[in-house]
Image (cartoon, rainbow, N blue to C red; front, side, top):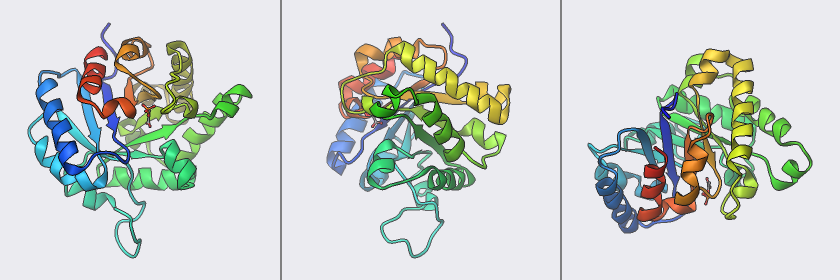
Length: 254
Ligand code: PEP
């Protein structure tokens, strides 16, 4: 079935891959996925591999993403990287508000919304992550938590900015655990997110926003997840580190 929105599959390599390993993987992806036009394919290496990967994917159908960025443009922010420096390597996307950063770096919705605005101003597409913990799901608070994250992390964005933004619904209990949300669980939350977006920006814009699912996506569950009407792609962690599994996910999502 033809999807209303173009599928976007992004690989979040997290704190993995030396430059040599990154190049090895991306050369393979370039070869394997050269014929794919139906999917936006994005790889998000660590900062240290951005320059090499950027050169390796030149003139290909693979796009480059970063895993984080500063809310500031420049200045005395030791260890931070701003949007402008990412653009030097032709980065087009940036993952913001990943649950690991929310948990370990204590990033909150207000900070994530400032980063999202900075990314969009610099013409980077933010991939904004939201999702509930196991405790929140089990206590029936999934929708409440996800709505608060959506409203907070996207606060202040115009409709035009919202349309360009990609969302990733990543239930924290499914990340790196091997537990995937069922396709019905994913669809339920994705449809709910679209309802929240419609309340914020109207039906038309809500229908244009792409919402990825993330959490133990593998080649063998990608097709079922992507077949859901409101699932528009995947943010892939572990399975994006290997050529075979990531290329199979991309192929199985069409
Ligand atoms: C992620 O960290 O964004 C993720 C979805 O990881 P994994 O695919 O390994 O669960």
